[in-house]
Image (spheres, rainbow, N blue to C red):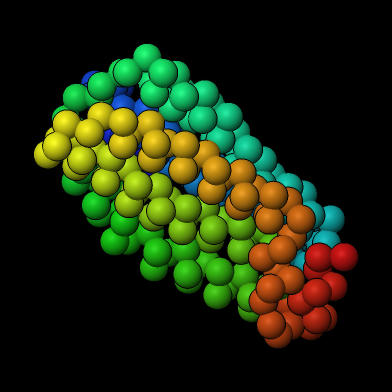
Length: 195
């Protein structure tokens, strides 16, 4: 995630693409969220409801960090008519993420069902958000490169901000855990992890 983020941010800065920069920041946020999940499931926190709630909130906050800045910059780019440059590196990077991230996100959400962990479900949602984001950024970059539709870049960024807020709210509320059938790691019904 760190390498993906660094490449995306660098390519976004060089091309002047707010969507590509947002994609890179999202990658960095995903890396932090992964570390939160590792923290959550180590040592005495393994069966701790309080640790689950803390991890859930920390993962949710990651979504909220991304959305305002990306939305502000997207609106600024739309109103000023800022036209990003073509970024072949950005298109290749987002295409590979569009293909790979759904597998990772779905695997984490299945694991979340087994563990009864809303925090893990939210972190998997971040991987799926990365895939949506990659698709939107790819369309924006390709539309700009092929047709000169520069406005697709900030519109893709606005879409990303909206999805990030929705996923953050759902993770904060613990809705991912409640949606999962079965038992959690303590052998209790999943809906007890969201009370």
